[in-house]
Length: 424
Image 1 (cartoon, one colour):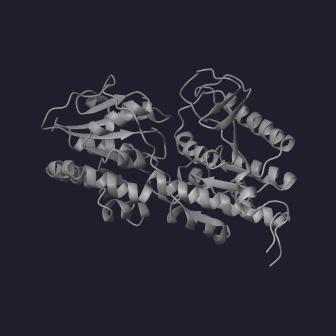
Image 2 (cartoon, rainbow, N blue to C red; image 1 turned 90 degrees about the horizontal axis):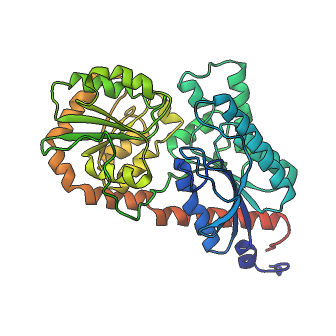
Image 3 (cartoon, rainbow, N blue to C red; image 1 turned 120 degrees about the vertical axis):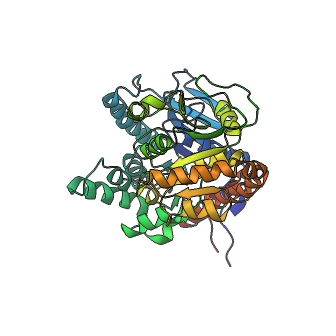
């Protein structure tokens, strides 16, 4: 065994300069920002120098922030982008390209030891990380929250043509050049492997449960008044094409004669108007729509609900794992998972005692599950502490941060060895 060159392994690992690139970092309200922040804050806490490159808040807010600031030990820098909103998709697309160009230039002009990116914007972020790594030899972690372009194919946005296979090849290259590809479920990992990603690079680790530290008693406009006989079913999150929410509306129509069964949709998204049109005659009777709310108000709504609802369009379980699952579990709220029975989400829901599962595209079966939930709601109310404790063991912050610390230290150690910083 030879003597390590300048510095010890411990010193090298503690002095890593880590750059994370994410368009909607805190205090913006994008769900992934709330998942990423605790990871980066822990890395700063243990001694790494952690930086985030992001933009001004624009996900659901137009709050202006300093161009450079420190948030809980993390150095946050914001790049200039055009003012945008979700009604101007061309401008948003232009901002994505501009953001990635500026982040690439930033990474080339500064010294970093590790890059952390996620799969947003789809394909482009992974490609950008690969370009930066090729030009600088910086290793990167590719955190795949969704699998693209397979998700666009499953949702009907793409067809199996030249463009689809080109995008898939680009993303496969980004995965195979990453030091680690972290994805959320075995279903998602299998999708990556089936398209040619090296299985040895894939690590399965679901998202950590985000924590709400202050109580909130605010009930948002549109949230129904609860009676003792009511069953409140809450869907909280993005109202988009991937969620298959028309199945829930059809189940509500089957059950519409029972006004004690109330369906609440809290959030916004491109499918919101379509869902409202489908539910027209039931709105404010058994179906209620609540606008996007802050984290604390959502947590309060989850506490008031009898069941959460997790819904995925057919086939989407292979390319995504809904983050709202963690929001329900953090409050001990049981949920109904509308997803194929062969999925890991359906298996975990039933085997871990988190609630019920029901296959998509079967509103009648969903209506039957909801009636069962109504009969057993008092039993489930008594299980909320048990659900929360079980979820903490599986998705808790402490366990997740131990995983991320070990992963980042391992990559740092391997990188230092390749550069000659450590020898054995």
